[in-house]
Image (cartoon, rainbow, N blue to C red; front, side):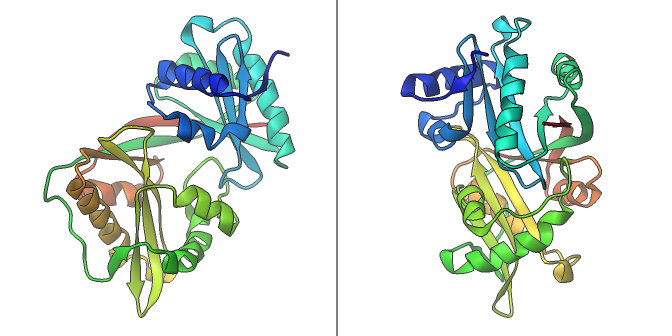
Length: 278
C-alpha cells in the first residue's frame, strides 16, 4: 500500500489541490494544517481525513480522489488505510457523506461495505443588510458561557439527526472543534445558558458561513429559543458583510426544516450519509 501520513507543507498543498478539484472548497493551508495528524495521502492523486466525531463509536472519514485518477485503486487503498486509522481511534465503524446525485461514489461506498443510514437536505439563506435581529436574552458566546453551553451540548446532541447515536465530545475537544468559528450565541434565562448556536467558516470563503450546532435544553424547547438564536446569527452575518448562510440536516428533522423555512431558508437535496464497519 502506498498510503502514508501527511508530513510536509508540500503534502498539505497536494491535499488542498485535491480538495479544490473534487469539492471546490478553497481551504487555507493553515486550516488544513489543523488536521494534519488526521490526514492520509496517496501520492497517486488522493487523500483521506479520519477524525473523531460526535457519532458514538464511529469515526468521521472523508476520501477524496482526483477525477482524472479514479478507477486505479487509489480510493480503495485510502478506504483500507482509513479503516486502520479509525480502529486506532478506538471506533468500530466510520461514516461519511456522498454528495447528492453522485451515484458513482455511492456505488463505490456500498461496494466496500458501507450502507446508507440517512439523507440530508441543504438549507441556504441569502443575506441582505439589516436582516435578522437580536432579541433580549440572546448574547454573543463568551468564555464565561462555555461551561453552560457545553451542558446544553451534552443534553441536546443525543437528539441530533446524523449517521448514528450522537454524543458530545469531551469538553476540551468540544471547545476546540465547536468554537473555532467567528461567533456563537447563547440564550440566557435566569442567569443560566439554556441554548447556544455557532457559525463556522467555510474554508477561505469570505462570503458564506456554515451553521454549527444549535441546541436547546429539553425543558426549554418549544418556546422559540432556537429561532431567536437563528435570528441573531442572521443579524450578525448580515452586519459583517456575509452573503449567505448554509447548513444541512436530516430529512427527518422536520422541526428544524420548518424553523429554517420561517427564517427564509431555501431547501434542496443534500448529501447521503453512509456508514460501514472497520
